[in-house]
Amino acid sequence: MRLHRLAALPAAGLLAAAALTAAPASANATATTVAAAPKVLKFGQSIRIKGEKGRPLRITPVGVYYHRPSDAKFTQPREKWFVAIAVKVTALSKTERIPSTPERSGWRIRIGGRAYTDTSGNAMSSPWVGRTDGPWINIQPGSPEVLYYSFDVPKPGGTLEWSTPTGVTRWKIPTSKYGNAAVIKPVLDAIDDYEGR
Image (cartoon, rainbow, N blue to C red; front, side, top):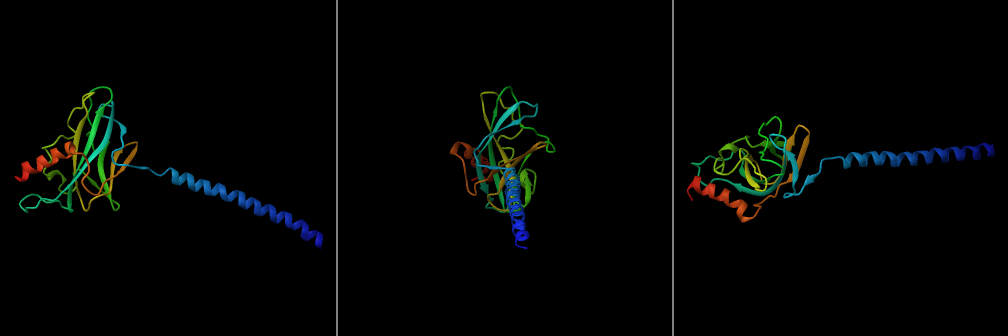
């Protein structure tokens, strides 16, 4: 009897060892899945994209400005805030512009599981729309441009997304004004022009 028990112990030990060996493989599989999750970039980090004609562009979010008109006679955001996102765009080979077909590529802000595009709510009625440079601008090599996008969002912050048929790039949006004076000035000038401050 003792011999049988002794013979059974190594077998049990082997099973335990096999279980321990299997556990790290499963843990590695989980770690690999987590590592593959999309990374959120810091606001101000650049990426390369393809422009409207397939030529390379470098885009960099460089400014954020939140606004609510103080006078009810001006169009108000449907959510709570208008936000201007300033994006520096550099042509890396030939003249190019940001892709303009929404179903192919585009900007959006994600907050609390909801996505807000630059046409959601009253975004198109923000005071800087039509008064600051937008995606229709041709970007010349050696002459970067700052383009302004407007959103209508429920609160400051969230995640800025550049979405294409091949994937999504994300940036964490600052919850207060961000960017140097030269980047923010066109937005302030547009508000002054529209609201007569």
